Image (cartoon, rainbow, N blue to C red; front, top):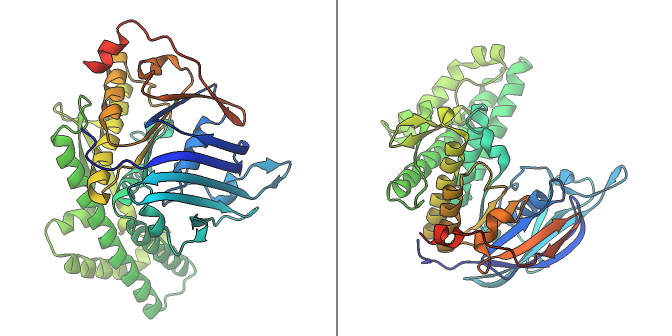
Amino acid sequence: MAADFPVPHLTRLLLQDFRSYSCLDQAFDARVVVVTGANGVGKTNLLEAISLLSPGRGLRSAKGAELARRNGEASLSWAVAGHFDGPAGLAVIGTGAEAGQDRRSFRLDGAAVRNQAEVSRHSAALWLTPQMDRLFQEGASGRRRFLDRLVWSLEPSHARDVTAHDTAMSQRNRLLAEGRRDPAWLAALEDTMARHAVAAVASRRVTAAKLNDVLARGVAGSFPVARLELACPIAEALAQQPALAVEEALRAGLAADRARDAAAGGARQGAHRTDLRLTLLPQGLPAEICSTGEQKALLVSIVLAQAALVSGHRGFAPLLLLDEVAAHLDPLRRAALFAALLELPAQCFLTGTEPGPFAVLQGQAQFLEAIPGALCPVADLPVPAGAKNAINS
């Protein structure tokens, strides 16, 4: 996995009244950055701030008002800014929101941007968090959000299709719940749902197929190969029929389901019914019955493969934000991960409670310690015996 693509570097991060940080101005001078520290000192907050410098709602999907540092009972205005050195040259991306406001704005080199697509030309990010470890036990909505984040990193317009579908569906649900059966109004909403549902599911199918191809070619190194499949009636229909025919069938189905959906309180059909199934190969084991370590390794392999896809699709590498990624990985898998990250064309930010597991990266990574509200350089670390051989083998 040689660095065949330009690697945008986040060279400086500035935070103002963001989460647990009142003020931070931190420079980054390496392609791999390791941040360690006790629980609750702001490591995940730091990764979240970086994730907000790319399109989307960040790694916690938080509303703008939830991101502000609090002063007693009142929340403050907050801001995040990042200095990037990338293939398009130097750029400063900023985002933030006024006190109590959910909607956040973006700025590029100090000027307001019309839409997040302008930001996507300079920055992309992928991440893994400990919360994703529950992906295989929770409901379909969590897996669908995970899949959609993978799609968004390739096609930022996918977010518009998902949002348009969900907005139309919510309006239709409300009309049906209130007993307002205006046929023209409902038909218009169902047309919007059908068009955007088919577009969204088509993008999910394409991304899953591309990931399966990349994973089959061993891009994830020694990590296990996963196979992604969609459990989705729309996806099954798209495999057999043209998109326009699937749209028409979905419109007809939604119209026929009005009474049923009114009684059930929600739509039986739509893009919100997609589920993602992961299988560990070559054993053919469903991810939900794999061990915790195998599940973590599956997620790592998918993110590594997605990073390669994003690099090829956009022409530059994404930032990788890996929160507590070493947890549940045995020493061999951990060494394999570090070796893969050093080969991958991407700037990587890793967090953990102790620096010891990352000591093999000494001399190749920037080490920082998180303390409440600040970051400090970490002194030289002792490298465990045999660690260098493990990472280079």
